[in-house]
Amino acid sequence: MDRQEVFRGLENRNAPDCFGALRTPCYVIDRERLQENGRILAAVAEHTGCRILLAQKAFSNYAFYPLLAPYLAGTEASGLYEARLGAEEMPGKEVHVFCAAYREDEFDELLRYADHIVFNSVNQLKRFGPAAKAAGKSVGLRINPECSTQEGHAIYDPCAPGSRLGVTRAAWDREMTPELLALLDGLHFHTLCEQDADALETTLEAVAYKFGDVLPRMKWLNMGGGHHITRADYDCPRLERLVRETREKWNLQVYLEPGEAVALNAGYLVTTVLDIVENSGIRTAVLDVSAACHMPDVIEMPYTPPLLNGETETGKPFTYRLAGPTCLAGDVIGEYGFDRELQEGDRLVFGDMAIYTTCKNNTFNGMSLPDIYAMDGNGSFTKLTAFGYEDFKSRL
Image (cartoon, rainbow, N blue to C red; front, side):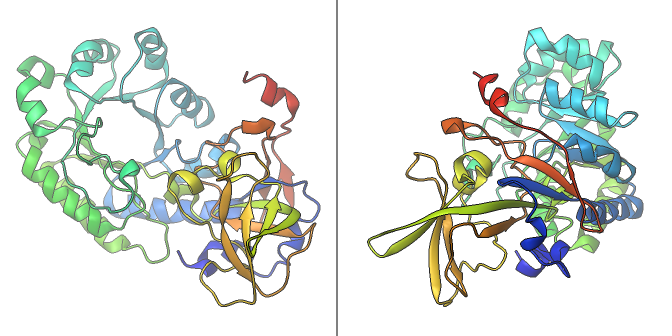
């Protein structure tokens, strides 16, 4: 990702000094960048007639839902709690929910919040579909077009061999009945991860090949998430063409449910250097932020996050391994080059830290949860949280 684009929200600011008054570690959410992303998404919806949802699994900081609501049709949830959050914090908007398997003891409550419910298997459709339909909900089924368009991230590939996500055509032919088909209002697929519109085009060809005979009977098609729509080099014209063609060909309402695209490059994680140690010629700066606790995708993906004033591939004179303070030997963020030597007390700023961070962080080792701040266009900060010991203790 273009580093200049990642940190564009800090242009004309004396960063990282502008964060000097904040206690670290902390997340800072950039309201202006969120609005920029919202405008791009709203333009796609306006140009195509599609409806765009916020996938809360990537970004669920509800303090910003009022800011995002004008640009979105609603929220997408992965279960009961996210569905309730979307209904309560973005009122009057659509609430879609997909879960790999629903719990019977939660389903009645879920029906209070969701208006679109997508099932992951024909068996789940059979078990819960009639109740959802009787409650007036729009019922969908997730399909698996068995079309992988990504490499190197099998953990994020719903079309990987043996995937539990979505109904293959073979399973459809084996298990679907006319009575169950009559329950369906729409189909859902989600196959992409941080990809461009070319991958969507390939996937749509597979969807048409596998389920083209079913689509004329549907009212809507949800194309899932993983569309990096707000990335500077994303091919929006191609996306818009694909959406329009799909709507016209099948006479469908089209939904997109990006998560990352909503909050892409709209957040920072500010940290302080606590110590510098050396072993076998490797200098490690120990930070007060943990990859394992505060940015878990760094380890799970894995990837090396962008760092303000630090380069991952460079001939800069000073190289450090940046790591967290936990007991996990692998709590390593990455190796970075700098123009000067690091010192205890230095502030560092990681970029693109709004997505898959606050919604995934944890208190392993008794690590504190970083507080969350909103940054306005004038550079002022509003503290949104006050995490402490009780937040650690209450989880146990």
